[in-house]
Image 1 (cartoon, one colour):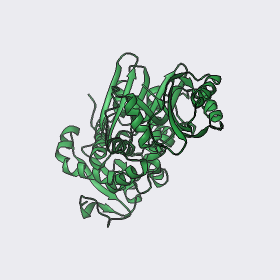
Image 2 (cartoon, helix red, strand yellow):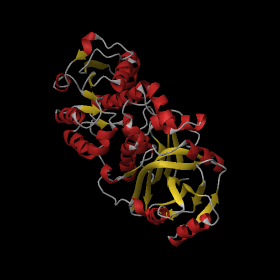
Image 3 (cartoon, helix red, strand yellow):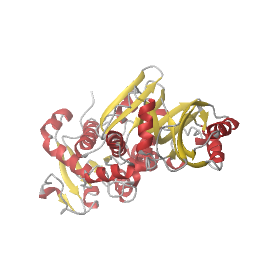
Image 4 (tube, helix red, strand yellow):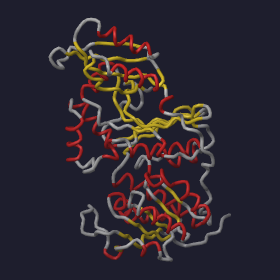
Amino acid sequence: MATRSKDRVVVGVVGCGTVGTGAVQVLLSNAAWIAGRVGAPVVLKSVADIDWTRPRGFEVPEALRRSDAESVIADPEIDVVVEAIGGVGMAAQVVRAALARGKSVVTPNKELMAKQGGELLALASEKGVDLMFEGAVGGGIPIIKPMKESLAGDTIERIVGIVNGTTNYILTGMARENRDFADALASTQALGYAEADPTADVEGLDSLYKIAILASIAFGSRVSVSDLYHEGITRVTAADIGYARQLGFAVKLLAIAARLGGRVDIRVHPAFIPLEHPLASISDVFNGVLVRGRQVGDVMFYGRGAGQGPTGVAVVGDVVDCARNLLHGAAGRVPCRCGCSLPLLPMEEVVCRNYVRMRVTDRPGVIGRIATCFGSHGVSLASVFQPDTEVGPGLAEIVWITHAVQERQMRAALAEIATLPMVNEVASVIRLEG
């Protein structure tokens, strides 16, 4: 039987924005329940933030408030530090300093873990402490721990997910209300679901960090975020979503990671998915991740992917794990196992079906000329139709669906088609998945 090395666990929080406040609220409100789950009190001693005047929706007790991170990190009584600053600047310094002092760390920081997770986990292992990050992907959805533990005995072949609630809310609004991107984004910002600067969300960076983390766990391979392909939703239009519906598809921003022989395919981009696909019905700010194991088959994770409450619960769940390990002398028992670097499948070699919408001169022979150009680059066409849509004097809109084709061939075909005199604009290209 393990022997206890402590009779309580002391926690400090650095950063008291949305996520930090959620974690503080859960730690204080559920203290008795948490103590019962851990087997000893889990005491919140300090909360550091640079601005205590901003509204939080929860009053952090005055006795807990600190104005600098160092007061938390350097406190010898504090066993677990929660980093809730975000980004890779000050947050990285806090995490590294806390680990170096032999403190376990909990962080929901997806950018930090995607970019520096390997070295930080190695430092945690060296110091014999825990670094946990359940809240970094999926908010309140348990996904990191199931991937690391429950599915550890299987070979994970593919992960496909909607992992950004902001973009999913925007796409849902565009579909329901026939809005274009700019209008849907403005509405989403007014409701507080999108930041004033939404770049990380709408350009796919947030999703990229999350799928990089999941891929590294699933495949046991270090992943360099800078090498991965990402494309956001800024060019998706209400017309594209309308045509998708006519064709039996929904449009979602997908994060994809797959094992293909000795290589991995990791990317983020908008995609048409069939309406019967499990991810097609996930709407508003909800997230969903579909994991395929060689033995277990498909496993679905679904829930609120962000927010003060859900992410706060995920953070405190990690605190509970750290506390249990500390009480039983088992901290640092699960080191990083991403020991290899599997080669990445270049985006040019990815094979997909494609939806293409273009505007052309409305005269006989145009469809045939463009189809010939597709064919000359090895792009086989599954269907083509010309909607009865007003797009300008003397112009017509044409929608093409291709069979599966390598990205390199598709790009070459579209580059040549864009130069044809009868083509006014290649307005949209969206891949088909599922």
